[in-house]
Image (tube, rainbow, N blue to C red; front, side):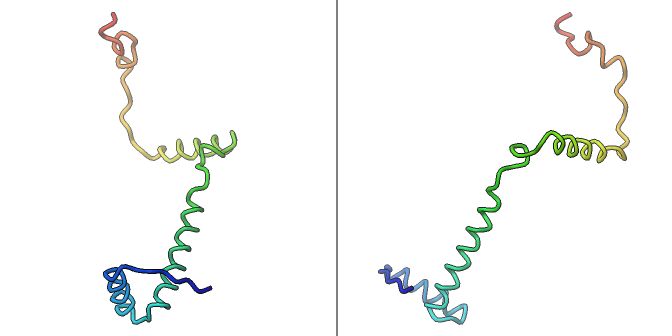
Length: 95
């Protein structure tokens, strides 16, 4: 396909410089640029797929939850004292 576009002189100058830096003529540079741009668009479409929380089944949620719980098994967290779990201590200003 052939496409003709009018560029501002400063844009044309920048384009020529970029192509020259890459060691390419303008046509090859633009062709490569457009192909890379389109590939990026395609990969971004893949990223736009629905997230896990919108598509997961109950079983998948449970599996992920258990995996998350198991990932904390090797941690040595301090235990919470029973006194801290008393209602009076959770809502001090209400009693």
